[in-house]
Length: 139
Image 1 (cartoon, one colour):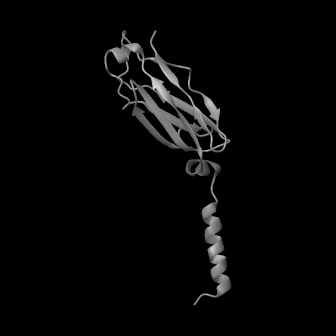
Image 2 (cartoon, helix red, strand yellow):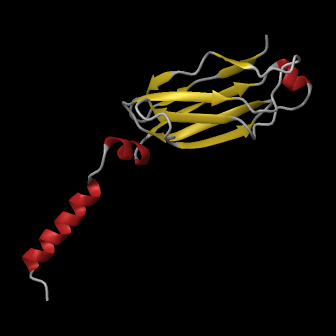
Image 3 (spheres, helix red, strand yellow):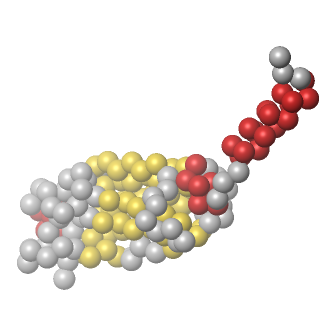
């Protein structure tokens, strides 16, 4: 039979052990900020009816660990453009945003479109929802 003092010490050790971790691990789990916006296809893509959002990629990561994605990403088609929402992002952290159009989006000359404005770094506050819209451009 365990002594009451030993049980309390074991419980305390387990509780504090689970709460510790590196800052990067904390960033993966926590967050109450969101990023939302649209990605608008170039006219050549709309004209050819290939505005599928299936290949659109939205990647948000901490600037110190750009390979580790953060948040929950949702992308869906809405009126010939792609609506995206990235939720559960950490606040008060420098976040790097990368947006990639679908591979089927091609300009009349066969080249991939470029994005305007260029995705970059942002910092969100507690419970903030920021909006960043992008337009895929040809030429």
